[in-house]
Image 1 (cartoon, rainbow, N blue to C red):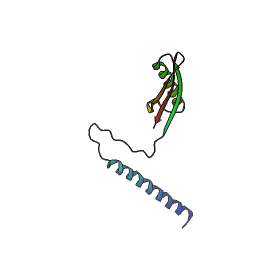
Image 2: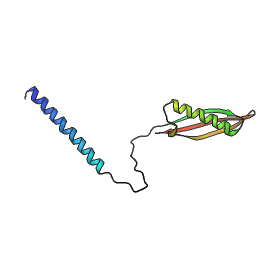
Image 3: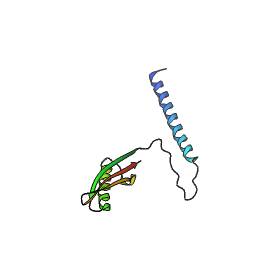
Image 4: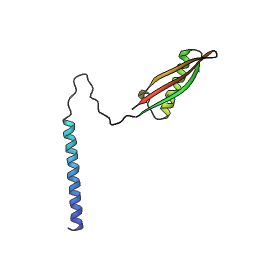
Length: 111
């Protein structure tokens, strides 16, 4: 077999394989079961990524101290590339300190 005919043969094999992949993908997408009304279909993911961020804060009331600490923890998460909607405030540890409150807040993120 000459070099040009082997290149044509390879090109034909690649073209057939690519079209088979495209047709196979369309067949699989068409075969997906419809979800019932009001229920969103979810795609399964092979792996999820998660992270936890902690920060401390201080305030003269418990709610102010929690807000300061949680804002700092959310800011850490955002600087690490997480969206705020992917994170939630998991835990707080409030302790009296001087005339106010010292707080450690933990934010948990998953995508």
